Amino acid sequence: MPELAAPATYLSDCRPSFHPPCAGDLCQAVPAVNTEHSNEQVMELFGRHRDLISLPVVENGQPIGLINRNIFLSQMSRPFHREIYDRKSCIAFMDKEPLVVEADLPIEPLTQRAVSHGEKALSDGFIITREGQFLGVGHGLPLMRVVAQMQESRHRQIMHSIEYASVIQRSMLRTSREALARTGLDADLVWEPRDVVGGDFYQFSDTAEGWLATVADCTGHGVPGAFMTLIASISLSQAIEQHGPRDPAHLLGGLNRSIKQMLGQLDGQDQTAASDDGLDAACFWYERSRRSLRFAGAKTSLFVLHPGQAGVEMVDGERQGVGYVSTPIDHVWHNREVPLQAGSLVFVATDGLIDQIGGPKAIAFGKRRVRELLLAQRERSAAEINRAMQAALQEWQGSQHHRRDDLTFFCFRVQESV
Image (cartoon, rainbow, N blue to C red):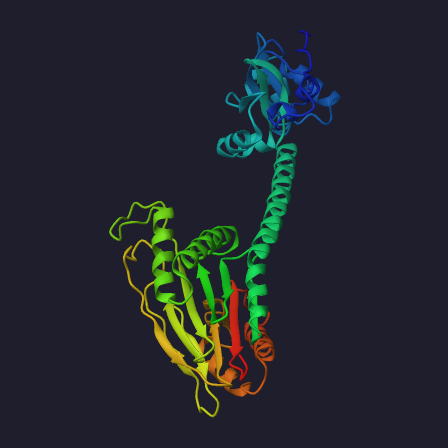
């Protein structure tokens, strides 16, 4: 019998302990045959090596084919095939175009090549070489196991990063909650990202004369949305520092310019901008001495309920979003003065509340349900109203409908002493 090719060692035994996964890590030591070996000798090899899935064929150290165990045994078991093929060269039943990869090929391109090569690369295996010389074979199951482990490791790393990003985002919002607490208002805020981090944000600043509040919904949710909240929050803080808190419309204009410049969204006709991102927002300044609210909205409305009033008043924002490619860089928002009185109730929400699908007909929660709940809960505190709103939304969503978006809403009541 011609001499068998020497079995390969695992490449991982020959490399440093720490290296990116590659084809060599899957290299299994197996015997190999050459063109001088007969089918009878291949039959003997498969008989001795019961776990051998496939048998490489090499010539001058270079692989030229792969013999699949099941196909070979099936062919040789057919009537008279032993008599015809026993003494013929083993290339008779050899796959002449197996997948051949170099040992240093990383796992990801190896997986792509294995999938594009067809099912046989995963079932029969693939030949691994070093500088064209035969090393051994790899198989589909170990490859899929390594891919799964890599994905799991990446998922853990990504989740750790996102969880830490949540710490950063919540820390960024904490100063606004502290500012809200200093106002002494009967007020409550709900902020619930759909994912670990979210694309909604809020900002409060308090002065002796009054306080400024902004509730905003940035493009996207999850990590992309969180990036936008960071950009928007920093831009808004800069606008407040530059222009003061008393003119919400002017602040939205400054925020619009800053986002468009930062993201390269400078021309409303430019369809080649790197992004088309922005935000919807309600921005309002409350002046204590006059109990007056100065409001500017970008695709966001206020719900206002005065004492003794039979219905909830809607104070609509403008239909132009902030920062988007279609929004002119010099767009001007306008302030609306909203007179309030002791006991007046003000509520604002992002579309995570308004647009949430639910109910028996799978439709949006809608503004009508918000108005009805405010009327029903009008005598309760802002915190109790928000808890009732959360409960109504949860009931509406039920177990059949997933949360569609981030959720933020803010409620406050004007008091005699504030």
